[in-house]
Amino acid sequence: MGLDISRTSVPFGAGPPATTAAVEHLGYVQIDTINVVERSPHHVLWTRIPDYRRADLHHAQSADKSVFEYWTHALSYVPYRDIRFFIRAMKLHKRQDQLAD
Image 1 (cartoon, rainbow, N blue to C red):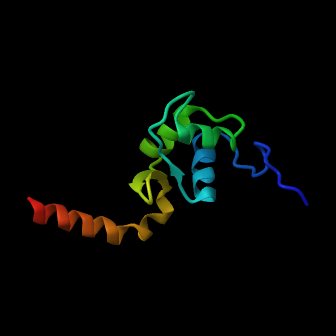
Image 2: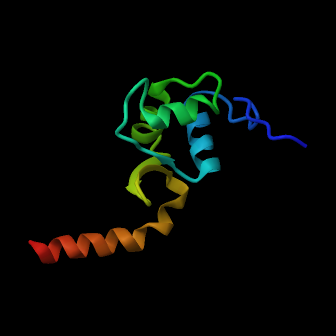
């Protein structure tokens, strides 16, 4: 059995729901500041979703609220279904910010 690296190896569908499904499948998509051809998260999602458009990620984040930005090991888009894994760190960070003020 070979490694299937085609853009359709995992059927995510199309549009913003496909973007959410791909981020959930991957666990997170790192946000990278490098912008040579296109921003890194768009490359990652375009290689996995045949009809991916940049607006799909924006829609998933802002309208559907099915992904959010957070610092995992680097700034990343994370599926909202996994927010429970980050709440403790978010509260700790908030407390530390309040103490610093």
